[in-house]
Every structure is written in structure tokens, then in C-alpha cells.
Image (cartoon, rainbow, N blue to C red; front, side, top):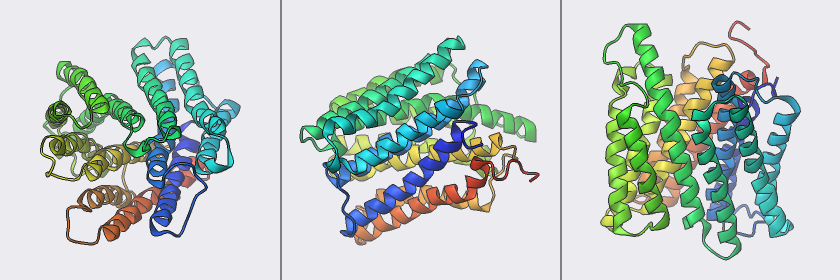
Length: 387
């Protein structure tokens, strides 16, 4: 059952790794744990969230969505197992990189996204689903970014603030902008129609949405290439404004009574917020801390959106009602709380280490909570709500 659909192993293992990697990071911050790694702990932390955890969730989402896009059967069994094993090996070798040569670490860590990209290309082209080839471009960019991260860190560059990390982050944000722009207004429209409410959202991926994406891409790339230039600051403010206007068209406030749906709107909110709070310090250096602001994207937009999609997809594909129970609401509040705590950590008179720890504990609560609550559904121990 675990290998019957891509979301099952990758959502479960991804959530476990998100929690475990944060435990390890807390241990390294406190001086209790020392991993045998070649790079600095901060860069390891950034890599294992962006390219480790997110890599798994992207795989789970795409391998689940593509069959519905193409009408082809899902990737299952041995083919899925190979992808899972390669992802696990990537986490192991990168977290014990002192034991291996740099070439082995790079080769094993990159093999997973390369294989995933190849599978996605094959499935989309075999199903003649040409319009979704844009996802392949974003996935390829994500893979290239991981390679650049390795190249930089192997040459002494601080990876946590390197080109590769920014490029990978931009690639993920574009994927969220594309996929979120499809599913959030669609899910919202369906629910509003079903419940007889008013304030229906705008149709997904219409002219304004496409224009926003076409502007967001070069603006993000400007920041990727010139992260400290004032031009990049203004470019990010443009992204923030357009993405906020885009989000406002999706009738998010009408979904307050449906946490499973509202959390998608809340997660997407961190895209314009991140753009504003990363862009403003570039223009006004005393405005806020750039590293804290970047967590609006890393933890807020990406963490919340992935957790929201993971819960929704797991419920839907395991035959359950699309309803957030108390435990699910708690993990939503935990991930949002983790984001806000990390953002304000350098803006309060409290001890930053205390706030970092609080943010980390909330993060662990969110993802360990997901793993515990949803493992029976993901593994097939409980196959449907009737069970």
C-alpha cells in the first residue's frame, strides 16, 4: 500500500525528515550534536529543508497529480521504490559528507531529482499533456539549483546565502505560484458553490494571473542574481503587490469556516509578505533582518503550503471527507506560529535563542504531528474513513 501512490511514501518520509532535521539543527545550535558534514551547519540546515524536504514533497505531489493530468496509471511499486531509496540515500550522504568524497555526495544527492525529472518528462509526454511541461522547467531549475549549491559549497561559498539556494527558492516559489494559482481558486469556487455562499473567486489562471506569473519570474531572477541591489528590492515589491492582488481575487475570507481550505489562502499569503519583507530591507537596510524575512518564504509560504496540500491530498486519496479535525488544525497553527516566531526572533527584546527554539519546537510539532496523525492513512493501515 505504501508504494501504491507517490504521495504515500514521500509525504510521510518528508514530514519525518522535516521534524528530524529540525531536531538535529536544534542540537547543533545548542552544541549537543555535531554531524560529520563538510559544510557549515547553517548551510546544511538550509539545504536539507529546501532540497531535502521540499524535494520529497514535490515528488509526492507530482507523482500523484500527473495521473489525473494524463490519464496514465501512477508510478508505483519498484519504480517508486527506486525514487524513494535515492531520496533517502541523498539525505544520508549529505548529512555524513565527511565520510565520502565530494563527488559521491554530489552524484547521489543529485541522482534523485534527475531521475524524478526524467520520470515526470516521460509521463507527461507519454500522456501528451503538453500544457503541464512548464512544471518540468521548474523542476529542472530546482535540480540545477541544487547542483549550483554543491558547486558553491565545495568551493568555500557560504551556501545559506548563495546563488544556488536563492535559485532553488525561486524555482519552488514559481511552482507554488503556478500550482497554487490553479488549485486554490478552484477548490474555493467548488466549496462556495456547494455551500451556497456568495463571493465566488475569480476563475483560475486568467489574464491577471498569467500576467502576474510573467512579471514574478524575472523579478525573482533579478533578486537571485543581484540580491543586494536596490533594483531587486523594488522588483520584489512589485512581486508582493501583484501577488497580493492576485490572492485578494480568490475570496479567501469566505473560507474562514473551512480550515482545510483557509490554510491554503493563509499559506499563499506568505508569498507577497515574503516579497515585501525581503524587498524592503534591500531598499531600507534598517527595516528588518533579511535572514528572518526570508523565512516568510522558506517556512511560511513553502512550509504552510506544502503541509496544507499534504493534508488535503492524503484525506482525499484515502477516501475521507475533506475536513480538518482538531489535530490537523493544531498542526496548521503550529507551522504558522513557527514562521511568525522566526520572523520576529530578531525584532524583539527577548533572547533570540529562546525564540529560535520556540520556532523550532512549533515546526517539529507541525510535521511530527502530521506524520503521527496521517501515517495510518498514508501506509494504508486504515484504508478509508469507514474503517
